[in-house]
Image (tube, rainbow, N blue to C red; front, top):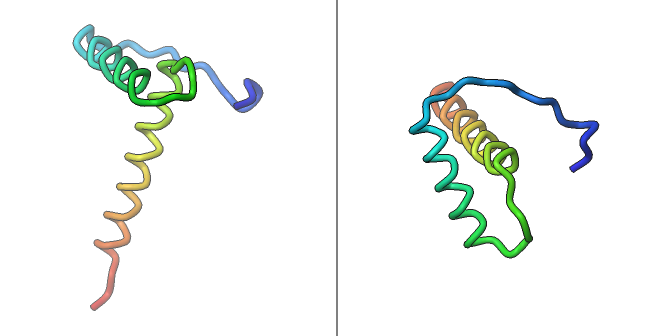
Amino acid sequence: MSTSNRIQLNVRIEKETVQQLDEIVEYYQEKTKIGRIYKGDVLTDIIKKSHELMLKQIAIQNRKY
């Protein structure tokens, strides 16, 4: 992905959350064969999947019977 499409986020999170993210990054690194995995890529994937799930839940809630 081009760096021109990216922005930098500076956030403060708990140490436990950082450790969990590191574990997830290691898991992605072991299970994927595309080369080096970065925290930003993992976070992007998690956010995209969460957003898709949210949209599905909204669609279900808005269904008219």
